[in-house]
Image: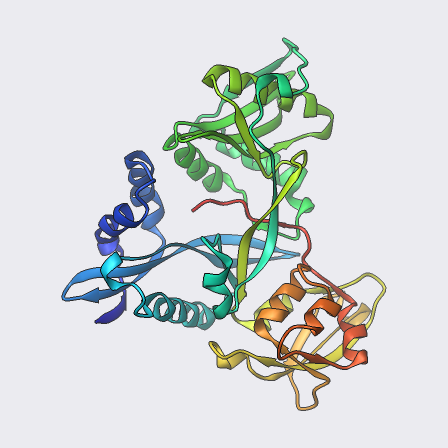
Length: 378
């Protein structure tokens, strides 16, 4: 059995395993994925006599983390053929991939888990809950017909305008999100078209006031609608019309009007110094503390860290190795804390975590990453 990273020209060799394990994916979607996404991704595999038995895909995204832009990888396509399961192959692939990403000083990696229990032992923790709706019929929306507002599917030539709209009006809404540039929206259009959908634009008086991605495979779905607040009525009209066009109810994902909050994305901290350097201290606070980190998979992170920040650092966190520790934090507990998914008090109660009262008070001064927006599918 051999674990190795495939060359780009070999990426297509994993399609058979994908088709076998993820049989719900359509040929159209896989044509898109293996034509476009595997051009610049990384794939690690376990092979036996030349046969790919297990795999993991790392898809690159440039993420905005507070004021920094960092290359991170989205883990997808984690799969093992039926005869080769329960041999620990997934764990071997995850560890190898994480070591490689650590070597590039990537702050964290993320994935959409099939089940939380699979990834918790590797110190992945939930960091993002997505608001969703149940299936909605056209009559469930606030209908406001207005002939001055136009709804149309975007073409590739509209990607630059879509990116400018997202950057101008929504880039500051999230502390962590993927950079939505022209290439991002072009790829998104291809992805949605492979799912019998597209990117729908909402225009009023000739200018772009909203957009959303949609797919219509097993169900009609709208993803991450973005619109100017004063045009929410136009979005609701657009969603209702889409449901009428397709003759079926529609479910909305990453919409603030969604009543259901679904844990969606788990993250794993990688190069801890890089991750800490992306963090900020709350306005008006001065922070200085130290703690030991326990990381059994990436032992390079297992050090005593001093973090400080305030007016003299322009609120940026500075991290360095030190000798005196005020506590012990596991890498998983730290992930939950940095992303604001767990409070300092909750993190302090986790197994193998110890914090002095001073350390707790200092960590409360961190500006945690509570506003996360990671709605990518692959």
